[in-house]
Length: 113
Length: 111
Image (cartoon, rainbow over all chains, first blue to last red; front, top):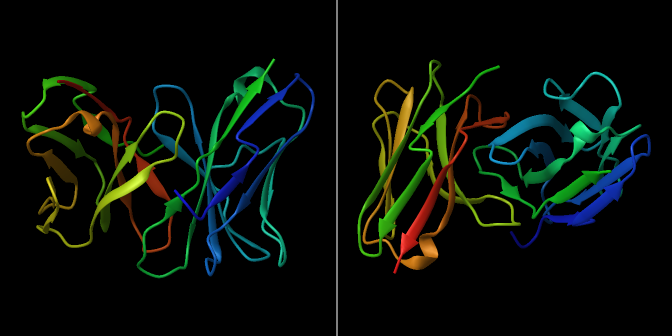
């Protein structure tokens, strides 16, 4: 998974705190996707962004979750007022667009205590 | 929401054996992808299939895109210990859209 950098790798938050997850796509990639994975489950799509635009947020919970991909800097997935059910692995993927596959990062494991 | 049915859920095999797993869907996909995920890591793309009926190989791995565009299988020949991991199928409708993942097949290989 070299190239798509996610940080932090592990994040512990108390209930009610905010979690900020960062994703730097591969060089030259302008498309970013966020997925969530619960234990023993496949990945579930959350949001698809291009620079400064949200293209598809159909998988994002309506409240507390937001995502951005600014002109400069990494993409950020923000979870406000975290609850225990937000504990999961969050993966970012990037692509150059067109008919090319994604490359996934190594994920951020969020634990809410 | 849309789901892919992936089977089997888990497999315990002897080193050297062949492995087969498959995915089915109630909807049509334009692209089928197979990923492998190691513990603590993100999925790594193994094979991508873009045409109905397409059969593609990558070393000991072979995958096919079903003619109906609603299913795909992955075969691994002559398994080795490093094949251990979780294998996921994923379907994609457009070239840039989101992926829909199966729940995974956990493969264990006994030396």
